[in-house]
Image (cartoon, rainbow, N blue to C red; front, side, top):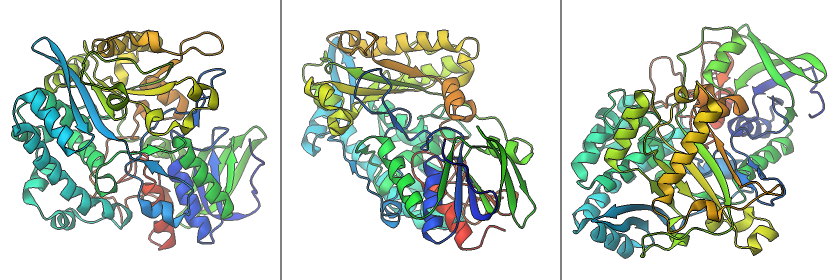
Length: 523
């Protein structure tokens, strides 16, 4: 716990929660000369964007929760002078499959020629590759037009539509279920599934869900940086939040860990934030309060009616291996296949079946998931010992496992799901994954799994939802305000993932909340 903050002064801004968005806001405001206090419940800052050594006696720092970077604007890194870098993955994805009794797969990346040849080998023609090029040219155009708006005042829907300036793309991504566009472009089930996965990360929806929740998820996964590329944070995700914390402190912000905000009282002119720590209860006065927590937590702090409940739908697994496993596909090099996103049980029909089964209250028979190896792109997360031994990390993210499935017995269901998920991976390996797992100092396999309920308990994510609630469209809607961070209370802003244009490791809500304070549009 840090030393207690001063309660004898009025801060320009008190920020509730020291996750990456709260730190972005703190750094911007402090650099602008504002007095800033950050209250963080845990004994460290970073929230879900942290690096830890989860395995006893093993010198490997893993991005324990969030793990890739796409939506973080370079503008934020430049503005705050962050010592933070990302590296591009050499391969976008590899998807193993068995066709005509023969193990094969689809490689996307490694150069245009190799990708084209991989499509042809899998599908027997050039048609799917040509369709892939057209489809992602469309999303790339949208990315170039939409991404720059994330750090600007909210455009109206019509303004964003004019900015996109492509009615076919607008209809495909903003108006019709994304499954329609995927089915129009692609014939091959596996290719359709690979395209759809970006619509389902942490989002429990079908390709044709009329709510278009899958479209919003897809949009945020293909617009990052104006390209849609997902990069590896050098040094792990904690390198970003450490850099942000350093920037905030250097600019004068006070970061008080071990201090839990329990109430916000606001009168439209200012506010008081009551907090608890090991030393007892205190009150911090503020001209503005920025809440880097979920909308549900905001309502609890202000005494307002809670919003509709959120629900996460993912399994997160971290592993450390003595070596990468060999694959059944004779044309696949594990160092390439695991460098990008390794799709498992994510054919189009498999994804639909998994969703239908989970919606009926049962675990998917073939749980879909995707894996990547951070250490192939960024070996700095391994200490000298593990690196010398050729060890590697694996991160697995499972889909279509809503929190409700774990309610009866979280530990038992998590163990059952992990076993069946790894069995789907083993079906494509030439050796069992268990044979490749490293062991920690106590002789236990280096593998840990987190369900949505675990994320709710550990990080305060409502229902384990990694976005805090359903993702929003990146344009103004009724009640969204000028920057998308405004709440129903003047001078109280939402700067977490639940803000408009929130979700993912982006810093965008933190930037936008700081801009709202600085330009005086907070009410």
